[in-house]
Amino acid sequence: GLKDVRHIIAVSSCKGGVGKSTTAVNLAYTLAQMGAKVGIFDADVYGPSLPTMVSPELRILRMNPETRAITPTEYQGVQLVSFGFAGQGSAIMRGAMVSGLIQQMLTTSEWGDLDYLVVDFPPGTGDIQLTLCQSVAFSAAVVVTTPQKLAFVDVAKGVRMFAKLAVPVVSVVENMSYFDGDDGRRYRPFGEGSGQRVQDDFGIPNLVQFPIVPDLSAAGDNGLPLVVSEPAGAVASAFMELGAIVVREVAKLSVASKHGMTWDEQQRLMRVVLPGTSTGSAASAPFYLQPAVVRRHDTSARSINEWTGEALGAGDISDDIKPIS
Image (cartoon, rainbow, N blue to C red; front, side, top):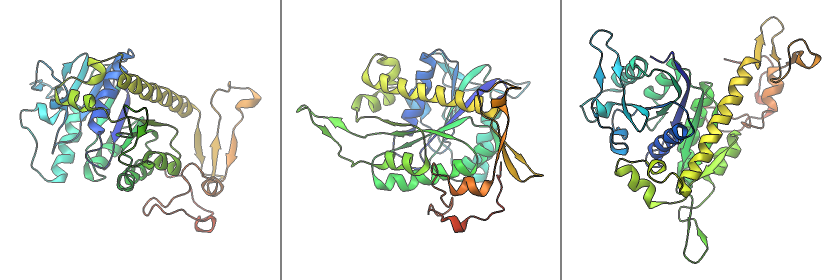
């Protein structure tokens, strides 16, 4: 199960074809290169990508006949579970059945002692995504987009879903951002601005832009992630930046959760204790905030309507709101 997994990281895009699976796999192997114990869970039953992107010697998942637990396969020191390794290829089944199957595969696999489990989400914001977020405690999420405006529309839905389910998004990855020509100029054939807009509109702390690199997709097709085949290359350096962001932000969130905010139902106020203060000191004394005031001054998320994405005016926010989680 997941009892010995310290952090679960979601990699999501809500739009297909933006390089989400490539990002998830290379991020996982980057974390492993940083010394962490890592696993990858491919949550896409309809079109599993993991069997194409890695080349484990054992390509079939095994099940313990007594415990009925799944034993992950392994490649380059990273634990792997995908429906594509179940010997079934891709699935043809209804959403409710898929949600149950994905949850069972994730929670009954014998992951063992892991620092990070990277979950490659399928595109969309449907039953599978909601079931995963509601049944598993995700530490953080990374959202993947491309520069086009259309990509922003779909990715924004995913960011709102994570906000609704209290999963913090720690970084935006903008794939296919640019390429550098032989003339020394930088070209952006797909436009620009989607990743920056996601970061600005939702207050996401980090943005990593990846160039158009044919070797990156070719490496995935050949079953050897580029950060493994070229660990000293420019792409590996960019993924090292993303890996450092994930490690840093998850560590900050872990510290904050030990102090953080609680809800005082009697006073109907948010009780806040700042991290990094010693118990018993004057600095560790809690302070209280009114939820409506916090919401009205929420520049990080710009007080958006989670369903429509429109900004809310101060008058739209009721004085008696309270945190939902």
